Length: 244
Image 1: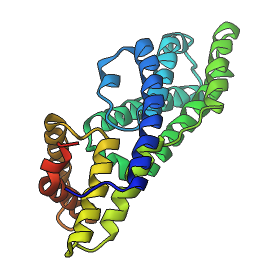
Image 2: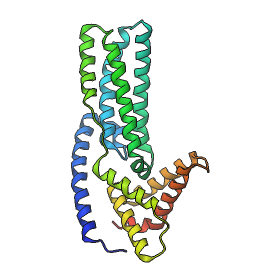
Image 3: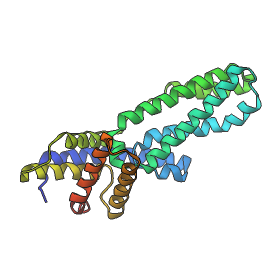
Image 4: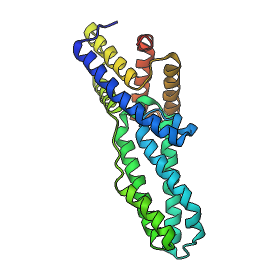
């Protein structure tokens, strides 16, 4: 196995610090939410937890909104669009619970964009329904809208670093010398640590998740080639990853 450099060890300690902060935030939200879906989130935990928080808040007032029966076409359209946005939020959380950790890390920017689109859709629909609701209900909707306006999504530090490392690996040619193989292994070990793919069960689950993604794609899809390469790396260095 390759020896870790001082810079690498410093990076690991830096990552551990941010991981600890993230875990504290997660435990706080888990205590509030406590759902199995949230416990299963693999990557982008905080973004999913924020989405779930608003799913729960909107779901609490949704029966009252439906009971107020906004009969105009705009009201009915806003109500339908609100439900669509809620469904998209639930599907995104499910995606982050079932997909490959490596894939989720390299598509982090896309996840942020999807979260922002969902947030904007929820804000728009609720703003429209607020104008048609009774005053007491409108006040509750206004509170949710206010909080949605200030909601920001960002990739957590460790996951962002993991995604960058994976993308660098994908941009390099297949290693031929011992030094490049060593660098490849070191990068993958770093990624595995940051994404918690260091146990036998986690490694097996990650391989299975990648295989399921590969099966859904056409042979001509570039993403399929990327996923196959990531699967190859896990098979090649799996024994070293489990030693972390």
